[in-house]
Amino acid sequence: MSNEVIGTQTLRKLEKSSTATIANMLLKKGFKNVYMLGLNPLSEKQPKMVGPAFTLRFMPSREDIDTMVNYSLTTNLHRRAIEECPVGHVLVIDAMGSLKASSAGDMMSERLKAKGAAGIVTDGGFRDTPAIKEVGLPAYQKQSAPPATVIALHPIEINGPIGCAGVPVYPDDIIVGDSEGVVVIPRQYVDEIATAAYEATLYEDYAQQRIKDGESIFGIFPSTEKSLQEYSAWKRNNTPS
Image 1 (tube, rainbow, N blue to C red):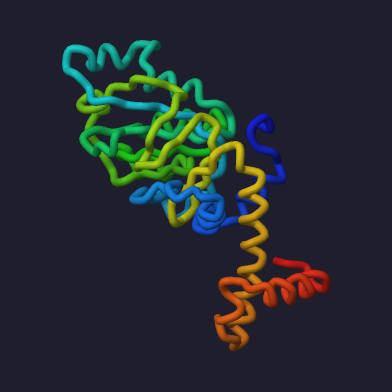
Image 2: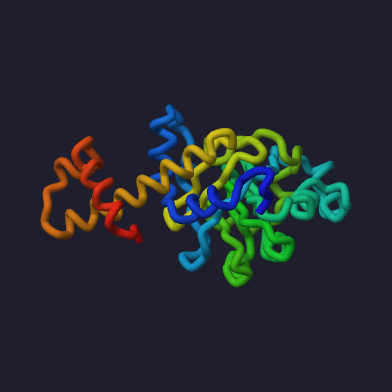
């Protein structure tokens, strides 16, 4: 993970916070469109995904330009995106929501994993999904799209601003993915949001235990001034999980 974008402590806090909680903290800052709705993890067993965004943008393909010969060139931006994605980053692909062709396959996922990438996200779909699951790289898609990329997708830009599943993503925004989906944190707020989400997670653990013990949800969740005072007193005498 590049410390130039995200520090170790911030990374750890995000790893311990759910995407839902992170989205709630962003909502408190006024950000309403941060969750990539409709995208799902490729595997229930894949690890948590946290990393800065490295982006790839597609446009519709055209038959005289998008051929397998063109695709094999070292100048092809799709393949360059795989090679240039930095260590610890998440490759985020704007496929315009298209399921007519694949955004990537198992060989590209294997290469990203070998390079130390944190994951891959598309608002379209992947091919070779059983093999991608075996690779173990965290991956999120709308649904599988086996046809060859050149049939419908032309790579037009690397590491510029994109929209993915209707959410704006700028290079080095922080991408967090868990079993529910993917959330985007504007990079200038990542430390603040990570701390707020982590603290909210600790409080929710405390509140959940009180509710399990038979207490009413009223006055505990959402938190009140009184419940936060009680939580602070509890924290002084306990080590949160």
